[in-house]
Structure formats: structure tokens, C-alpha cells
Image (cartoon, rainbow, N blue to C red; front, side, top):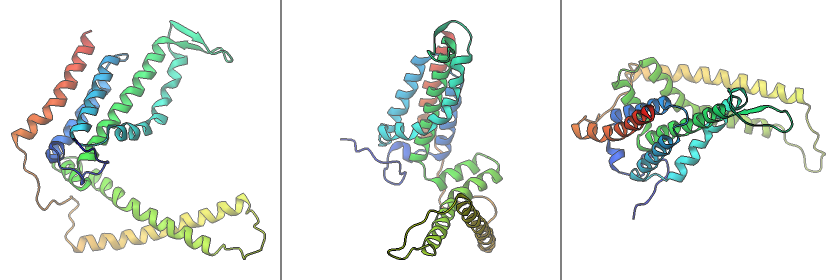
Length: 263
């Protein structure tokens, strides 16, 4: 029986986990590109691509329910296309009862298509992250000649975002410890201006601390031989088997795109 794992690339050892990270990155980007090129209203192709993502999740022993749940985070952004429903051309399906805005059939198809494409694209990215360690993914980006500045920004953002969150939590605890109210004293609500002033001071202090820490970290990295590119002690070797495995989902998606464009 296959045991499904959470989205942690270190918890499983499957064929997708062992696949060369460069191949996985190219496959994920190719699937996202092909999904974006799908014509509007190709719902059969969308369902097939969704089934492909779920099959990859099962092969990688990642919970499909968790992949779908994580991909729903893109809905608030993709729903920005809801305006197409009311601004699209004829024919109109109906009109809103209160405002009288017409509901365009082509606009509705385009809006639903954008939502499907967004969900499938995010699922491809989630599966990439779920089967590839982040440092290995950075090495794959560098190996594929992605600009080093972009790779370094992504690396530092991922690493020090957690440090900034911890620093902000410490500042919040320090603020709370200095704002204690003696037992039995009435708790009075602070004004909005007071809270805004306090929050601004915390943000300023966090910025100063982050700047000072960045200088110390950068000097420490230079003293340890940092050259601006991620280093891999034992880089994986690309083999024909990895390329063949990676071609399978890309060819399936490309075939769905060709069929959708022909029909």
C-alpha cells in the first residue's frame, strides 16, 4: 500500500525525488508554459492535465488532497479575471438581478479557463517543491544558467525570511512585556494613532537590525569563500534515464495542447 507523504522533500524516496533537479525544473516550467498556452474552453484538456498532476503526486507519494488544497491559495489572484464575465462580448446568458450587468458566455468561459490554468500551474510548482530540496533547486537554477543575481535573491529571501519573522516575534514579545497592566487595573484601549506609532517604531527597529545583520552575515560569507553562486558538495549526474522520464509528462501535455488547438 502506498503511503502518502506531506510536502516535505526529505520524507520520501521515489523515482520523482531521485530525478535530476535540472530535469524536474525544466519539466515544471514546460508544463506551466503549455498550460498557459491552452486555448480557452479546453476543459477536457484541463481535466487531463489535472489528472496528470494528481498521478505525479501519487507517484511521488504526496497527498493529492494536500496539493489541491495548497493550490487554492492562487484563487484570490485568479479571480481578478471575474470582470471578464461582465465585460465579454455576446451572447449573454443572463443578467444580474440587482445591477443588471449582463453575463457574457465567452467571458465566463475565459474566466473559468484562467482559474483552471492557474490551479494547474501552481500544482506543477508545488510538486516540484515537494520532490526537490530547496538548496538543490537553487543549484539546478544556477546550472541552467539562470542569472546568478536572481538565484542569490531567491536564496537569501528564503533563508532570511524566517530570521526576519523571528526577529519580529522578539520585538512583539518585548513590546508586550513593556505594556503589562497590573492585576485589577482597568484595560484601556489604545488609540489608533498610538498603535500606528508603535508599529512604525517596531518596523524601523526591525529594518535597522536587518541591515546590521546583513552586513555581519555578508562579511562572514566572504570569509568562508562565498563567490555568489550556490555550491553543491556532491552534484547529481545527468543520465539519459532522467531525460526520458522527464519527457513523458511534457509529451503528454504537448499532445493535449496540439489536440486542443486542432479541435
